[in-house]
Image (cartoon, rainbow, N blue to C red; front, top):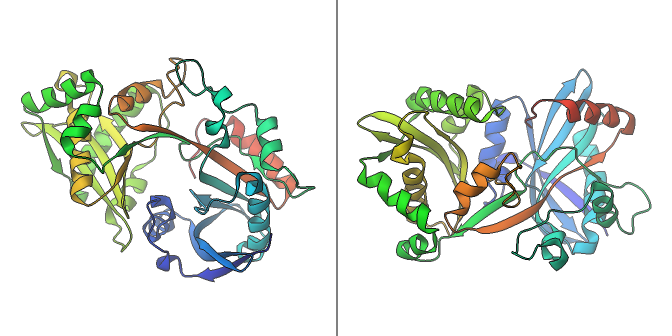
Length: 358
């Protein structure tokens, strides 16, 4: 497999439904200390899409590279490791000698989601096998230069996607009865959803911090959300939606729109007024807003891989499953080391970290 990369401006990426592969996302991350790169990919002389790459220093003279939901182009299932290895090798000159490794946060669906023996009798996914077997399958046919499963997935590999190509009444009908009831109840109880502005970031942060404490999660700081709201780009946009009753903020979310895909990026809710079901009104408003913008799908962005009460994202699974989306299982994050010694030290630290954000 002959893979070539041709550098291009990060502001000239082709529009895509993957927000994290847009020029918009490159600008957001640039404000947060990353360096954004872009390139066109050719495989055996044939154009194979473009790619956004991010790089940052992790110590003096040492950097890491990260491809958020990239590359988008999907090779045959038995050539994925070969493709990533060849692409990583080709990118080394562009990334420079200080780069320790590149992390691929793959948007590709897991090949194990096609294996019938990976599902239980109720149709619930049993998750992929142990890491060793996943690496063997990914790197089949490679003598060396293998990619390694990262110790953590940065972007959520498991999600639910709602089809927006149907009428609103059909989307409502596809919801679970309790979700549909709570959605309509929220509006009957006087919840109103409005578009927020950059000046509403204080409202968001208060709700977000309450949610993080309530669920004991590690969260992004204010700088990240400020960067989301101030960016303007041709290929994507992010909107802040706020659900209120009588000017009392009850819930809020960040909705992104890129090409024909809308994504529920982040959500938060108040400890007060929970009987008003504001998050349901928020989601239904986001779905209608996404359809108004011509989106064909709505990504709920991050759930447990199945209905396992012991999973830390089980609460999100229960909430989001009620809206009737289709489960998607992606391959998660994979690393290609350029400096094995430094890489092993780095992931040992990463594996023990309380929280990790790329």
